[in-house]
Image (cartoon, rainbow, N blue to C red; front, side):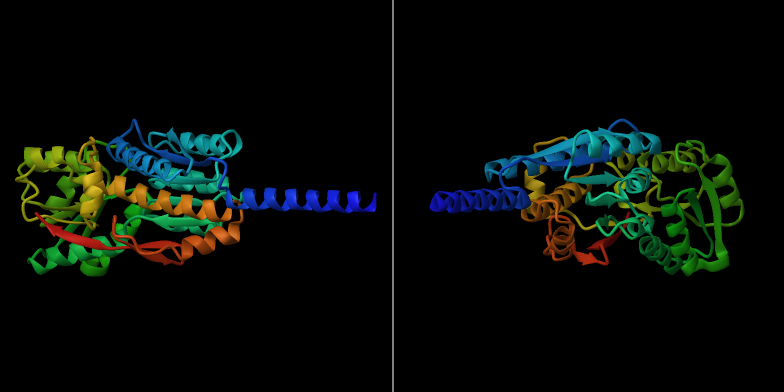
Length: 344
């Protein structure tokens, strides 16, 4: 009887250890990751590309025998919808992590998840959400440094005064700070709200103040609306922006208005990844490559660590360099990405 009891206890212990080990490493279950992006609003061109990058990764993982589920939530750049999406992903879908894109989504998602043990990587220029939770990581371009670099290019070309169409969000402030570092009081700033489409009044003030160039780091539509006014009113203004707003449609329509302009942006995705997406309709290879890179990091961390937050942060902190989109490493939970400046 004693031997039977002992063996029963041993078997129970073995089963418990095996269960805990399997749960921790999450090898047997499907990993669920929520993706909060824009699939219907002004940045849908980016969100659809993100979806393509995630689908490529999912197929690769399936070939490896690794089960993963990416649950997409479209919030159309509406912060209220982003908050609802984050709540659904956490409470209903029970996701293991979230990948959120753009400022409204990053802020709303971080606000909801700040007291939860759910890792978040957000793709946006802002840094403020990082203070909410040590499981939060940031990727995307450094807007302050990027705007500083293209402002310096304009100054080197002899532009004495510069204008900035500043979207009234944190990334607009970051860009403005970078421009002011170069131009100081010779910066003419005019603000606008996300969703505005008519910049005639602001551009008239910038032009009348003697600016020789204007910078606007909004979305594709903001760039198109700015260049349309420059074209229609025949303003002699060079243009600066973030590279991912110069889609094929913008380039085809406003090629002359982009002449002698400058952009900052991501390094081109490597040839291996470009070959992976060549048969898909992808408006932004940057968005696809960025999502592919960071979703893979999340999958690897969760696969290794399960829901162990300390283990996940260590895994992300030690994520190796990957040239899909020029990822180098995380510095204080901010992705160090290769950035390039381009002249048109």
